[in-house]
Length: 92
Image (cartoon, rainbow, N blue to C red; front, side):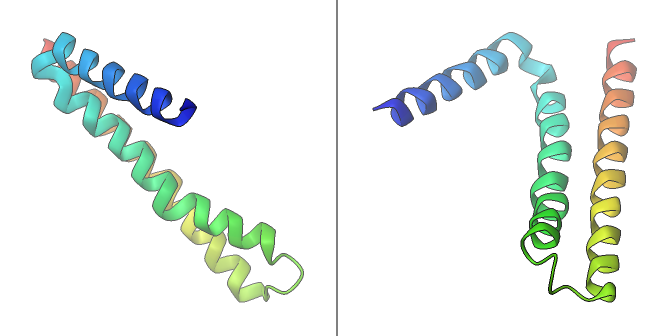
């Protein structure tokens, strides 16, 4: 029942944000999406791979994972910066 309560609370919070922000909800969605997508697609899998297989990874695999982590961080930061610029442009 705790999971259902947590899901219900998250849905209500999201719905509340959507109602309050109306036109700006697309920007909130873009902000969360740029952070969440880069973390889930690039940063976390490579970090887990580095930690779980730290004794068996070759140097090439470690370099590949680090490159993907850096790509995820740069992509997330660029997405957030572009979203913030669009919000500032929209509000002025």
